[in-house]
Length: 318
Image (cartoon, rainbow, N blue to C red; front, side, top):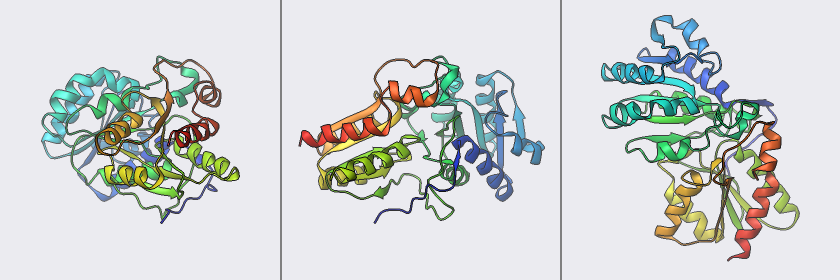
């Protein structure tokens, strides 16, 4: 059965959902603390700071110190959210690897302004490799919410699901697909549209593009299934294999490099369990550039039309 999807609630950045989720988690759980590295306004962590000043810590432009302190707080029993721009989390990769992941500490790394959606800030600020980096770390979960509702629910859920986690957030607004009746479950994908000719597996802002691609394909008589894979690690391998078996053609779609992200994760599963025609929609091993997100999505092949074309290509290879 397909999950309910609405697209009538306007638009919002997933970082907005994250900020709301922090407030909800802070209200419910007294052990939740938040760490920032100067960009708290951009990450919308200031709501938590103002409401719970004794549980908020700002480290300035010093990401390594933020991560190490977050590890220490987690070792003392706190549930820690540590946020900055996705590209700047990579400055703290070594302590994330050796201090947080090796010890399985309960620290959630929030990486905002990820992907080409960062737009006019240009390639130096557009993290398009972060999913690949964090997927490779043992013990690390990787989440990419599709909209602000899902980002809020994921943040609250993480407050009671211990362990290192990377949650990837957007700067720009994306359509709000889900209502308050949305059912979010860590590690489980959701079928948003059913179909039998191909399956489009998407995460983050590309879920909306995948839904538009479904409509374009349907108008031409092609029935494409659309699946929201908000948890890239651990991947819902059972659902991926089921979709490959039932539709015989797979497309992955993400605002990330085609190397090592959702497309890479799905390719690994299919190669090892059920070889299936696969086309990956994503950034083709190149850096981005400054521009409006919509223009960048068009130039780098991340629009609904590109997703639909990828579905037709995958179907042709059956």
